Image (cartoon, rainbow, N blue to C red; front, top):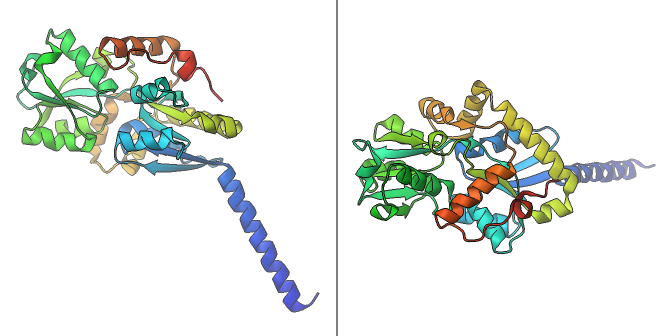
Length: 302
């Protein structure tokens, strides 16, 4: 073999091996949509898996993220469970595989507000009317005998809420962490109630997949789910959770420490009983008339 031919052969071999590496990486690739919130922390931990190529795709709002999930531009997402259920109700082929966390939300009031009654005739913000934050707020009002019609509910992007509270545009809010902790730490807000008081082990964000991913790559989906649950168990260690949150979110350690006191990442299975409780609340508070059954929405796992 001549020198030029030999060099050409080595070049072809290098290209072929490079292509094999890329093919293997793509074969193990999972594209996951998320918003940069404490509730998506398990995804960041899962990304450290040596056996998977987990690509996190950041979005700025729930509608954008849901569109990407519904249309299959991503394989899965950490998403508010209620809009995902409504999408399934409308015929979009989504399935929930696990919870994103348990608890982890607070009702925040402006400094000086101490009771639910003081929210009457004022603006209260949630990220989405079809959300656990809205359900928690309705439960808070009901528990304290305040009519929902007496409070003006508005939708705001999570990151806007602390500044809106500080400026007086809103009198309170309920939203994904760490934004509740931000207002409490900067002194503009107070905790009126926590999700653990209003709805113990409450459901909020969930790992939801486009079923096309389950059908086309069942083994990869099963591997990802296994790694995801292991990641959640590791985050039960407070120091691990804090280190990951500090790398994942641009917040002070005091905000993250406070935020992580309210949330749990272990035991992320969605039980039929918990799901039934959620569907009852969705009907009661007008989010959905006919939410999908557990078997329809959560009955298929890889």
